[in-house]
Image 1 (tube, helix red, strand yellow):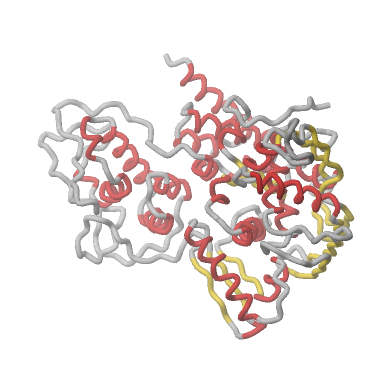
Image 2 (cartoon, rainbow, N blue to C red):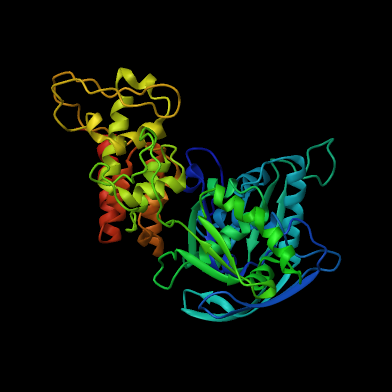
Length: 500
């Protein structure tokens, strides 16, 4: 039996708390049991929709008497509960315990008096609403689709509702809740039918419908081989029904989805959205990164319309080859916009990007670091003109390199000056240490087993703590087996804690 653990958001807790990983139970995301609209008067709904190769989704939802169906930020709280279940080691009794403020933070909801009241209502709705799911729930443990009837929450226990002199029954930040999740949901969590995303990605999406669409798309675009598809196509009205937009007018649906699509683009999750057809026959095509190739606009390249090639910028047609996601992560961590990062990763190899990032790190380690006022612009110029900079690990030039052109800030960045001595040892890439960067650098192969996920989460924690670097994560992710990844991670952590 696993020991019972109460969540704390302090920094000495396990990796998921420290780095802000949200865990998605894939059935809940694919089935979309919670309507994405902010407000609703509906007391029941049903849908039969076919969205992928796994067959039709058939669900009936019925709220308790006097209540409405789950909607809006109820989905955020559900995400928080699933994440809590993972952090608390998937307790055998299906119960997770935390304070109200901890649940809100784990759900990505800003704590406030109103939020305390709303989370109370959310838990009540999730407990009192019943779902009948027919031949649509995937049981990973048995590798089969089956029918289930359930309420997402079985029981809620509350302690410390109000202090003396306060309004009776009012939930406070210190109010402790114990939530017993449905056994079917918890078993799926224990079976590892999950996806991990950086919570900060969700926090960039301000509207519940945008977050809901992102979570659903993140699962629907998964292919049978667990790779992510570049596009996803779905009939407009079928998609509307799945999101809980029960309207007959397609123009109204298109208007409702417009801000959702813009939010997903701004967050760097979608490259484009296309509509084909007319009226109720319209089909939406979502295009995820990698983006379609186009020309590269590099600061400092003047009016030269040439696309920069890996050999230093000879005229060429835009690159169309696949790109390395690790290169995108390294670039975006330095502030390069996602779209431009993808274009750069198409035109430069991962090795070239790594060298550029190391060069930028070397600049920051010199007295010239105060002149590095625009890291993203300087990084692009290093990629476009590597000969202007002394690369780490290479012999110093015999003459002082010319100052590079301005990078869009009105100031000039200065290359590492020549000292006549060999360059300093290669510094680690100066990458923003976030969960999003770490999860992208690590192979998704680690997500498929319990042991692999444990290595993944420890590697993310070590990355955030500065015990391993970006290139270390790439090596861990490329290990042939989970035990090899574990051994490599242990060696790297020991190296940092006990340097020779």
